[in-house]
Length: 166
Figure 1: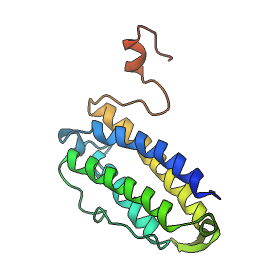
Figure 2: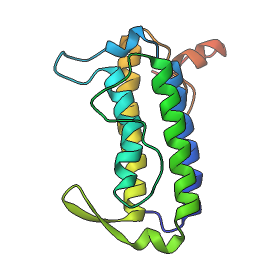
Figure 3: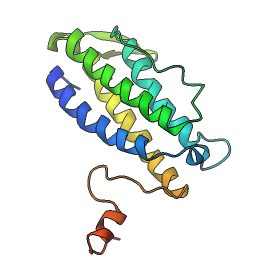
């Protein structure tokens, strides 16, 4: 749980940048990649991450523009990437300008439970990490190069003339 808005801002910038690298790598052709027909596609996951930023944070009273609803993902990877860029920046601005550290201790009804706002911010980041991991698997299946997230990818190691860890 975050107790200082500055701590959230610093971590959000890092995690949103990693998610943006994933979004920027998507192609229109890859958006339909799914593990099975009854699971979300890569495009649906990307759009879910994009729309959840506003959906979750608006429940806490933060005000900023929504990218749209979760059910209608654009067919354009570039449109999804741009919408995520705007949503993540808007969330950053909203927390920075609308909240103080004291606001993080206030509670909000969240999905049938009551969460401190600082916990909501933590779960928003963890939610991004969770679905970003799912997306990277689908990206590999779709033949896309996975960008670095927390360190070099297999391709990065090979380009450096090094043997990737197994």
